[in-house]
Image (cartoon, rainbow, N blue to C red; front, side):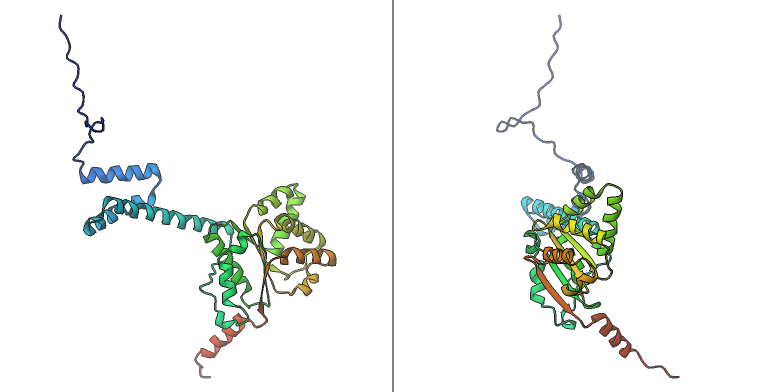
Amino acid sequence: MTTQTPPAKPKTDPKTGKAPRRRGMTEEAADAAIDQACRMLRLPTIRTHFETNADAAAREQMTYRGFLAELLMAECDDRARRRSERRIKAAAFPRIKTLREFDFDANPNIDPAAVNTLATCDWIRRGEPLCLIGDSGTGKSHLLIALGTEAAMNGFRVKYTLATRLANELAEAADEMTLTKTIARYGRVDLLCIDELGYMELDRRGAELLFQVLTEREEKASVAIASNESFAGWTKTFTDPRLCAAIVDRLTFNGAIIETGTDSYRLAHSRDQRGKEPATGA
C-alpha cells in the first residue's frame, strides 16, 4: 500500500505566523494593480496622479509615510473641491460671482469688513437672515450670489431663486396638491437666496405662500434677500400691510442689513468705458 506525501506547507514568518508576501512585482504589474485598486476603492485622484507623485517622491527621497500622506491629502482635497462644485451647481446661481471680483472702491457705501464677516458663514450657522437693499446696479445681486457661493464652498446647502419664480412655483405646487412637499424641500437647504424682491408686485396668494416658506425657516435656517426697495416701499410688492409687516419682521429679526446705496456701479462703469473709447472722425 502506497502512501501519498502531503503537500509541503508554505513557509511562515516565525514572528507573525503569516506567509511572507510575494516579492519581485514588476513596475508594469504594480502600476496595473494600483490602477485597479484605485478604481475599486473610488480614488480617482490617486489613480490619475500616482505615477507622477511616485517619481517625485523617489527624487525627493520621501519616507513611505510621507508619500502615503501626500497621496491621501491630495485625494481629500480633490474630493472636497468636487463636493463644493456640486453644491454650487445645485444652488442654481444664474452666473458666477465672487467676493474677490467685487469692487468695494466703486461703492463706498458697502463696508468690506462687514462683508468679510458674512463670508465666514457664522450667520448661517446661527440661522440668521440677511437683507441687501439698494438700487439697481449697486452690487446687491453680486453680493447675494458671492455670499451664497462662499456658503456652498463651506459645506452648506444653498438654493438661489427669484422672488417671482418662487411665488409662481409655490402657486403651481398648491394647485397640484404638492405644496407641503415643495415648502419642505426649500426648508431643507441651509441658505435660501431670494433675488429681485420688490421688482414686481405679488398678488395676495403669492405673498401668503412666500410667507409660509419664510415661516418654515424662521430662526432655523437662513434666508438672504436682495431688494431694490427700502422696507417702507415693500407695500408695493406685498399689498396687504399686515402681511408685509410680518414678512419684514421675519427677514430682519436678528439679521444683518446691508444698504448698497443708490449710485449704480454698472452705469458709472459704462460711462467710464465710453469715455475711454477713441473718438472717430466724421
